Image 1: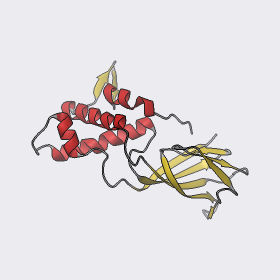
Image 2: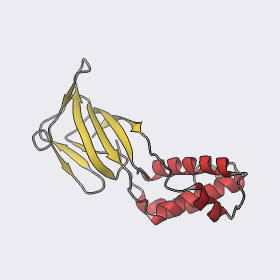
Image 3: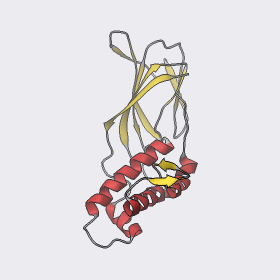
Image 4: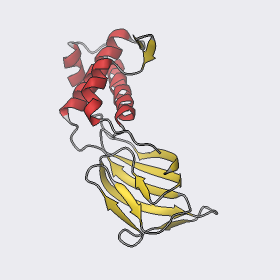
Amino acid sequence: MTLGLDVQIKTDLVTEPVTVAEAKSYLNVDYTTWDSLIGTLISSARTKLERYTGSTFATKTLVATFQQVANNIDIPYGPIQSITHVKSIDETGVKTTLVAGTDYLVTGNLFKNIRFFNEIDTPIEIEYVAGYSALPADLKVAILKQVGMDFEFRENVLDSSQVTELSNGAKQQAASYRRIIFF
C-alpha cells in the first residue's frame, strides 16, 4: 500500500485539447462576445474530467511525492510519456536518484507501475511527463458536453437530490477512460 500522495504540476499544458472555435461550433455560437467565458469553461471542464478519469489530457510535467511506499507504485495521471527521475528522500530532505534496472523496474504501457527491488522506507519523488499526445475523440466530446452544460446552466446541476460537478453526458462519454487507483 502507498500512502501520502502529493502530485504537483511542474510544467502545465501549453494549449487546451479543445479550442474555443471547436466549442463555439458545438454550442452553435457564432459571435465573439462569449469567447473568454468559453475558454475558461474549456479549462474547467478539462480539469474536472482529468480528476474524474485519473488521466492527463495533454502533455504536462508532473512531480508525484509518495510519503510511504510499498514495493509497487502506480504512477497517477497517465498516460505516461516518460519518467524524468525517481528519487528517494531521506529524513534530512536529501534526494538520491534511483537507477532504473538496478533499483526499480517500470512496467505498463500507457499507465506505468514502478516495482522496487529493495524495501523502500523513505519518501519517493517521481518526476514524469504525462498526457495524451492526441486526445481520444470520446474525451474531446466529453469536454464539449461539459462546456455545453456549464455554458447553458452556469450553475451546478441537480442529480437525484445531489449537486454534481460533471454532467451525466460528460461522465458517460468519459467513463471508459476512468482509472480508479487507491493510494
